[in-house]
Image 1: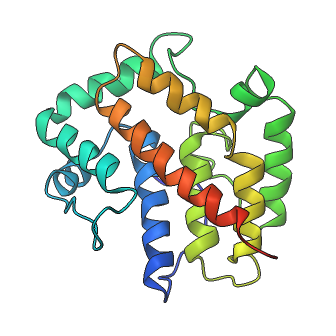
Image 2: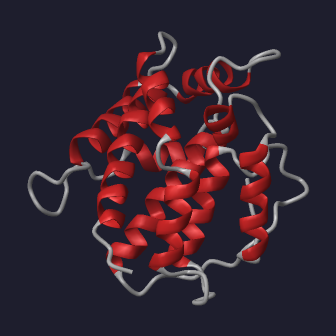
Length: 208
């Protein structure tokens, strides 16, 4: 399911492309339960990093093992139980909830202003707001691999990540890892935590 309107292009640098692909994977996993094709790809994914001891190797391997252990129908039911539900979901995926304590508050307004400045707009068919985790990950993917060099650059990535993903996402990962109904998404949260930690450290080292 598409989240925002943009035209990504492949990054020349393999490391940058790998980063974009991880953001794309997280967007797909948290936008909805994995599609059948994605789930099959995850089940056969290589879990060993090119270099021994890669920081993401263990948590990604655990995510792959969870996909091999759990039938897709069970993951679909888990997603519904955690993030949809009737009325208030058990776990919110919206940054405004964690930053402001409620949905559709000032953080969402500020995010929309920034997206307009980046030339991005929400797909009218999308049923979630722009501060949904999946949407934010899609924006990061675009800022890494998009074809507009005026916005798809490290400085913009750093600013967007720090403003709209850093901090509150840690609370989400904590919530999922402690939730009694989380199984596949406990593994997804652990992988996302490790990846976001790598991103935060890399951005902190930038001298822009």
